[in-house]
Image (cartoon, rainbow, N blue to C red; front, side):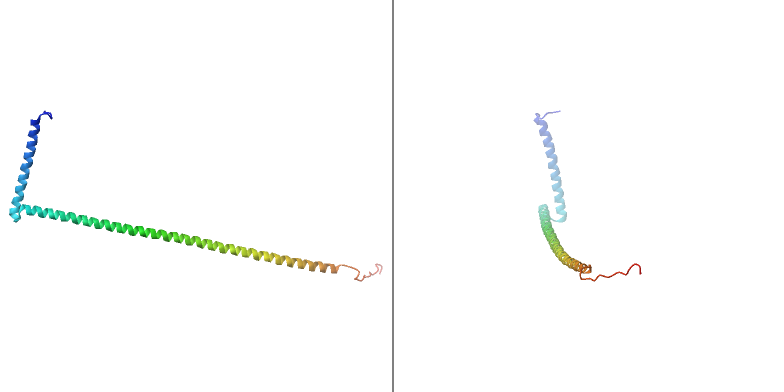
Length: 160
């Protein structure tokens, strides 16, 4: 086996490979010429038309891709805006709930204070009633005691 230093071996391989490639290209070129004669179109025109068609297809694919990307971006932006809107609505709802809770709690505290005031007033009124009743009872009790204004009742003799 020859090494890389043997330039004749490399030249032969390159020449054979290049010759086969050239022969294949010539055969392909002849096949295109034959097809061109059959369909009545020059090979170069057909090649140019194929290139133009390919370029048009590539341009359409790029345009479609750009439209799809723009549509995806638009939809994404709409979704992000919707999510932000819903988040703000949720926050506002939570703030409203908190405000309602604070308002309700303040009203309940006010009612409790009013109840305390009412109860204190009831206690004061009740205490005054009790004191008045006690004074009346005390006065009434004094009047039932025997004192010098009462007559002495005489007893019947026990022998009678």
